[in-house]
Image 1 (cartoon, one colour):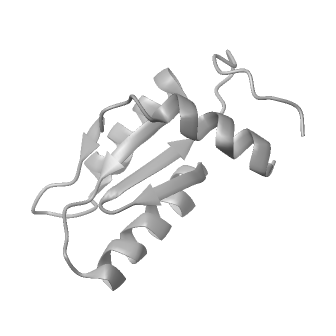
Image 2 (cartoon, rainbow, N blue to C red; image 1 turned 90 degrees about the vertical axis):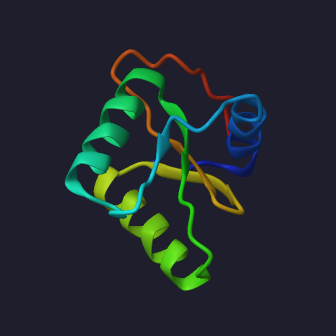
Length: 98
């Protein structure tokens, strides 16, 4: 499943008021952090993850790893914040048609 621009815009609007639910610490991207992201995606479908690093390449590598490992869709990234969406079995967020 890929997200259309219309669907991404809808998700960006929903994510605007959200606070980051997962914050990476000094240990970086660990198995525990990935497990936490997985659980949050299963519960909420749409989450924000904060990656506090000043190195752009490192930040992008972490973003890519999170997306690859969770199977979530990247809605957007602004600064240190990554917005992720992954539909759960209950389909809590209804996306607009393409």
